[in-house]
Length: 92
Image (cartoon, rainbow, N blue to C red; front, side, top):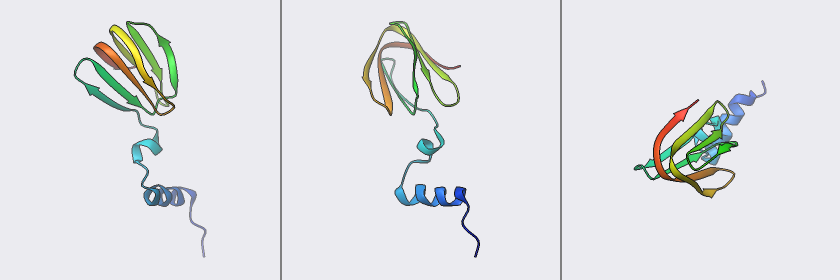
């Protein structure tokens, strides 16, 4: 009998544990509420932070939020919440 491949075993585990596929793949999840709030999940860290620009590091690329009076409202290992007047959200 052949041993199951690691990829197949991981896929079975993810399905059984009901882990979202986006989380496993490391995809960046962005939720925007109007022009005042953005929540970004699956990021690795903050590259730069001013009240006009916040750059975040992700697995694949950087994400840049620009606007006015930007501030980090909530920050955990999994997600970051930014508020202020958001003018642009850009993948670099």
